[in-house]
Every structure is written in structure tokens, then in C-alpha cells.
Image (cartoon, rainbow, N blue to C red; front, side, top):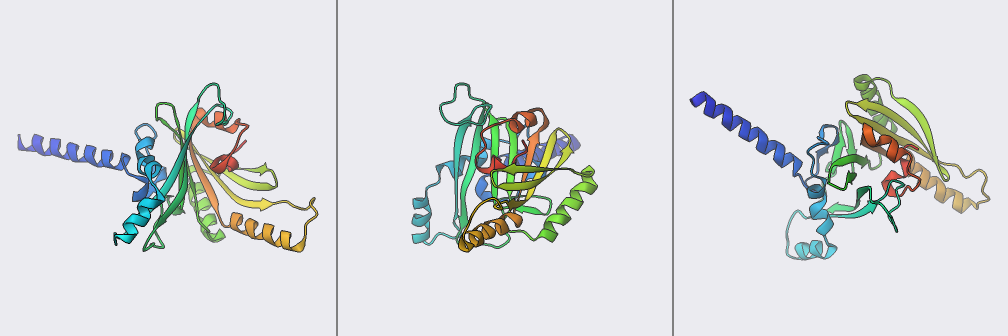
Length: 248
């Protein structure tokens, strides 16, 4: 009887731990994108606090001496199957965009989420109309090329060599590496290069564009997407924000 009670208690603790993980808030940081369960993750809850956040709340807490203070902002849009979020006829999904992140007494190693050794300063998501998670994306801060290459090598060893392709968007081009992970497809978009050879620019304008290019080269975006909706996102004609570097 005691053994049965111990087993029941253990199961209860495991269930509670899983529930708490799924209910993690954006402010908590440290979301393991690789291990997120797409069937149970509550995206609405994850972004809930951020959607209600106001910068005035941050200033009130700061003036009251509260420490530490997290301040996050997020926006949400309803999109159709083309990615359009304005004057849509048939809704397809809900898009969550993280628009701000910060903290007083900022810790250098604090991150919103991660995928193995790749740390993200921004986490975005898309769900269906019933809050079922379809896609997660994480964007890094400035990252050394060596660290990014190490990440690519690690994923190649774990999931097989990535399928490499290029994506052009306007004047920018990206390298896309794609792996399959169970019922998901993992895509890493990196090495953003700006092609301005056909433009007549001043030296000052060229220097400004070069600075943007350097930031792009030192940043990366990782997508974790359900296989069954990957082609739907791939075929979207309207790309804004974090979806700009998604495969097409």
C-alpha cells in the first residue's frame, strides 16, 4: 500500500512539474525550444503577461525600489493563409510577436529561450485558432560565427547533414539550413547579406548599410515548425517581422 502511495505521489509531482513548465511565462526566460511539446504548450498563457505589460508598470516598480524587474512586450495578430493580417476574409492562425525585452540589473547570460547552445533574445510563435502551437521562432543577439558554426556541426551530428539553400528577400539574402526532428522541421536562417551593387549610393550610405549587414551576419533566427503546416507557411506571400527569413 505504501509503495502504491509513493508511486501515485511521484506521478502527481511529475504531472505538476510538466504543468508548471507548460505554464512558464515569457518573463521566466530559459524556454528550451527543442523540448517544447507542441501538443500541450499553452502559447496564450506563455505570452499572457507580456500582452498585458505596460512600460508605466515598469517605471512604477522601479520608483518603488522593486528588484529585479522584468519588462516584456508582445503583440498579437490574426493572419490568413497568405500571411495577411489586414482585411482578412478567413482567419487561419494567431501570430505572437515579442516586441520588447529588458530587465533592470540585467544579467549578461539571461535569455528568453534557447536551443542547445544557441541562446535567444526574442521568442515568437504562431498558433491555430484553438491555441495549438504551429511554429516557434527564436532570434539570437550578436553571436560569434565560430559559435554558430559549432551549433550547426552539433545539429548535423544529431539529425544528419542539413539541407542547405539560399533565400533572397528584397536586397537581403540568407543561408537556410533545414533538419527534421520527429514531427517538426528545424530551420536555421543565418548570414544575412545585403546586395546593393546595383544601387548608386554615397560612401556614408554604404557604411550605414555595411553596419546593418554586420549585425545580420552576427545574428541568426531558428524556426521550429510542425511538418504538416510547413508548406503553408512556406507559400505565404505576405512576410513581416520574424517570418521574413522563413523559407519560401
